[in-house]
Image (cartoon, rainbow, N blue to C red; front, side, top):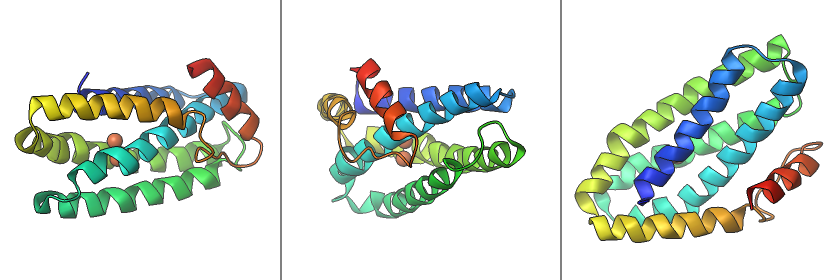
Length: 166
Ligand SMILES: [Fe+2]
Ligand SMILES: [Fe+2]
């Protein structure tokens, strides 16, 4: 799997979780879905920021796209941190997650329609494959990383999710 295929697969996974949220959830299912969303997005953002984006950073044609990407990640992270303290399945929670999903969709669109096609132009197939392997490796190590902090009350769940994933 090359780098782009791997990142798009992550995007699809997150989309699936948000689609389930949109269909309406019980508090228990909402809690589980939020945990999965938080976990998936944390690992995805970390490996993009630490492995994928820096691999493109030196190239001027990526500068503006990457600047936007970093600030959009930061925005989503902050908002997810706020949702972590809301009652899963409540009207407030559903509304906040709906807003976050809109922003993430915009970000995913930018990546899949602008950033990734540019990568395919600039990087060779071999480079993308190597980068894909690096991302995969980084994802596995980040699952146990201290960087993957969860807001209060979710820490234990994150450990369980990490254990299941490895
Ligand atoms: Fe992404
Ligand atoms: Fe991203």
